[in-house]
Amino acid sequence: MQNNTMLNVFKNLPYLGQYFILSFLLCLFAWLSLFSWSIVPITGQQALTALLHPDKNIIAHSIVLDLRLPRVLVAAVVGACLAVAGAIMQGLTRNPLASPSVLGVNAGAALGMATVSTIAPWFGLFGTSVAAIIGGAITWSLVMLLGAAWRGGNEHGRLVLAGVAISALCAALTKAMIILHEDQAAGVLTWLAGSVADARWSHWQQLWPMALVGLLGAFLMSPTLNLLNLGEDNARSLGVKLGWARVICSLLVLLLVGAALSVAGSIAFIGLLVPHMAKSLVGQDHRKVLPIAAIMGALLVMIADVVSRSIIYPIETPAGAILALIGAPFFIYMVRARTS
Image 1 (tube, one colour):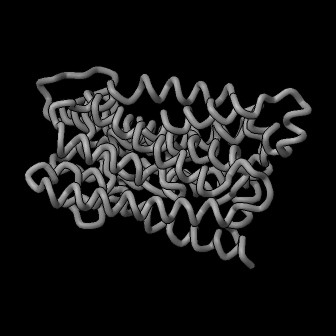
Image 2: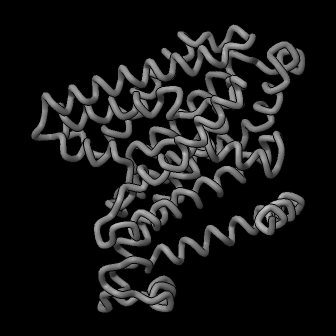
Image 3: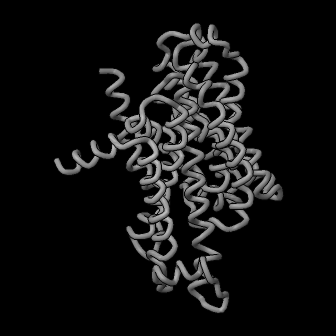
């Protein structure tokens, strides 16, 4: 009862109040992530000192700056990208079950990444990012075509079935790629688990430019997403060019998902779970939903990363597995709610 009361109080706060509270929680967990569950003992004060007055001669400072800080930044940006991508997909298709993992974008990106990693590993990080975007684009196009997403009407179930079918096909091809190229498969298997444990500054340098472009583009498209939610005829009468809106939103989704998955692996359910959480707080206005979803996505991935270290410490469980344990029951609940 007390938890419900606190939740209702939070929902009734002004938008800026919710935004600042979530931002504070994000900063708090970012700080905790810098020193918690470390093999070399690190205190919270040492973590702050490493940020404000770094000294490379101190081991704790080196661990914080070289290992933990890029991990925190990558986790936050990956969560923000996937959450915003999911919100765009739900607004674009007007389907509450839409997300990168459900509609096959994750599986397509995984197939593209596995193909490049096993056949042409010399392409490096940039090559895997491009391959993830291309793979996600192909599967996204196939799902939208097979699911009749642009025909209007109640095609929600057909769209999800198309996503499940394409995801299964991509998963099978990915497994075949791993079997045929076992010598190159170790990195792919780690990637498929979904984790930010190996995040370094090179991953951050690869991630932030694409994430910045994708997130800014998403925020600029939020008024258009609001108009699309009114229906195609109403949106067209209000001056929305549906073709261009769909193309731009799709490109933003692919950029955000490709950027996130290329560095963190196949992290699922953030794009499904977080947009619904954000809408429960601020309503259906995408101008408010997208910023809140970005913060909540970053916070959720960061929490999952911290939890992943503690379960069988000092061995780390992939953060993707923690998020799947949360997201899978939510997806079942959403399906039951739509069919009941």
